[in-house]
Image (cartoon, rainbow, N blue to C red):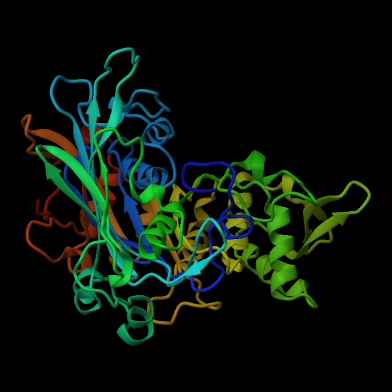
Length: 495
């Protein structure tokens, strides 16, 4: 499933337009202004990032912004707006619910910028493979709001500007600031053989925005203009052919962003033989997925994958797993995961606790080399016993790519982003991977307003740069544990 859909799985099986060759991809930077309480947000991402803060700060809005961009790469602006949580935490049909102060009078505008590593091969909607001329890109998008006109019953989002450009390899070190190997990692995923000309650009003709698609790779031909004022969707979302491979690669990257929301009811469900073989973001098709992974990776020794998953489950306190397997019922054509305890008892997966089921699903994802790209997880500690938090953090961290090794079959290019309000999780995460979420007063055109702030820990790679506040671990843990009414101003932090 994409971040906002329900039909597609986490892997590439069954997805259209996805090449089976190299699939290097990563969201490295996100900038958001005017979306919910993201008034002036800039955040850099590495392979693994943990956003920690109390409930109500708006840290889930970062996931919502990522989801919204992903939906905009695939659907109309109206459809994308209807599938993202509104400011009150529910799906909402009014696009104003996505703007900060969207129901106030005056002009409404929200802007996004995303820097991303995209696949070095891409497949279009007709099965043709193409290579983008650049794999490190910056995408910028500005949306506005138009009130109802004529017979319309609701307002709509409007496209104000849209741009896509290359980040050249020689400046990549300034954009990829997380610790990594230049030789083994960066040089293998960042390529570019194009001038500074954009792939998508916006100009203004008598105040009206005109978005242009430029020929890829220096090919001859004139840019293709389109008026933006009445466009029902972004220009990037209309590209489905290999004629524009770099734009298509950016679109595929954004389409691939996932938001995991593992549900116990889905995880407990047995699968039919004909069900999809990719794990869904809610956990559906877990047996079918594990069966496919075991058969694909080791056709003559499927027990190897089962043994590794069982070994991981044994890290959980109170669970005594000896082996597990996927049981095939040929009469009913059903697949069910069965666990065998050391004491001899056999348990179906549906008998496991909610936390153990979620842990099992992540173990299966870890074994699937087809699962690539960005995975967003909210509060992975839900249902996990405190004694098992360390095992959960280690598992989630191991899902992410190792930036000191070349991405490949043994080092899948996965990126993991989690949020949490658990002091236990915070104490176990490496300081360099942590961002602290709180709110701060931000100046806006309408006056000061309170928006989400994400601060790194001092002396970590994210802490450099002018105007970037930072925190210390001593600041964060008391803030997460002290009752709100007793909370004091953070000491030792800079804003």
